[in-house]
Image 1: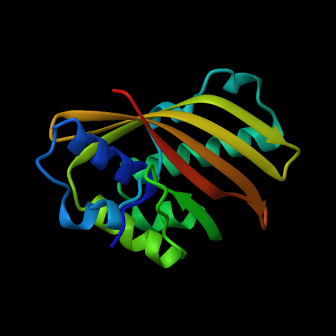
Image 2: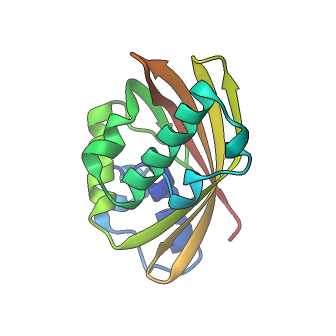
Length: 171
């Protein structure tokens, strides 16, 4: 079992920082990979200047973050394209959307909080976009810090995550 990109990176960083004695079995690096988003992403800086597809992207990103934070597994996983690449802080990644679901399910069973702030966004027409987020994930009173890169694409009129990559940063 693996954990989504954002979460796995956080859990491993918490262990490394001494905040956890060990990763939960379902969250071990072999089974880990951090996942999704936060409330701060709902109104990123400059959102008032966004138009059309960019507004739709920002709304989709905020909903993706909320699905992660509220541990809504179905809504969270639905944001990924069928062939999405999720890259964990340690370079590991699930190979299918079904594996990402299993990882997320294990993570969502734990008691944690996460926040995400949009640092930068780039929208290319109404077909692709990138969002960089500053993320903080707290478990057992210890917070880990991550930089999350999300590559979005339009599929059948909806923004979907094609690449989700998390990098652990110093707390």
